[in-house]
Length: 294
Image (cartoon, rainbow, N blue to C red; front, side, top):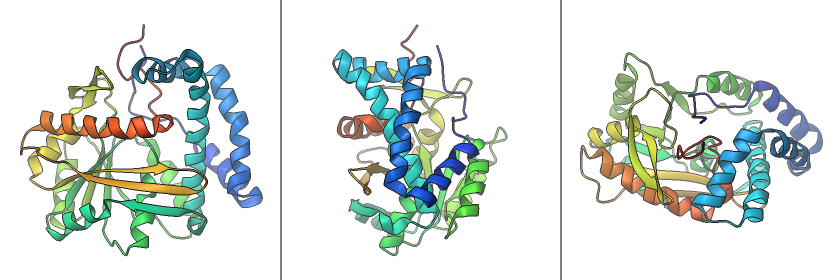
């Protein structure tokens, strides 16, 4: 069994390579390099292959060969998303097009002057959401709550090559729970707090819910905090479409009672399922998510 340990793969070297390719051969030409990278992952990362194959084969019901080919395509599109994120940070935002779906939900949320909670997942490319907001003069501070300390180093490098510095602030989950005070301060300033709700790691509190027909563990923190704050909750995803086009989805968490973390989680998994069914290749949890593989 291989569970997520709280840190993601991905190194500064990888991002440096992306920046070099983007600047010297362009975005779409850089995509060609990914066929070699994806082939390497497909051939040699047997554990990751096993876990993502299980997702396609058992949870989505793909045929054996469709599931196998989808493993390769998953690595390939993940690489494209990393290249896109790097290109946008490096000042090539105008090369991409953006589509808004439910942005009024975010505007309504901020109009209440309570701040708000966004819950996303490790699908698509949420970290470019702020570039969507720039298109509609959506001036609001986003605070991303994370346990992944590696993101600090990567963010510093991306900031060093960025034409415009990222507006996203990071709030790190700490053992002393001091991050709760940071969250409350941000909300009092009518800012947005963003969680990713789909990565539980060993030793942390969790809740269970069904996703794609089987029960899985989810981190308790995002749902406990969001359900107790008494502020609006919106599910937000930024999904890659064909070519250099992205689609932002924003959906209000409906019929969820205050202090009902399990109810919020059930609402979240239902919403997440709808996105996974529409974008099955953009699920980037390469570990034993359902704890169902020997």
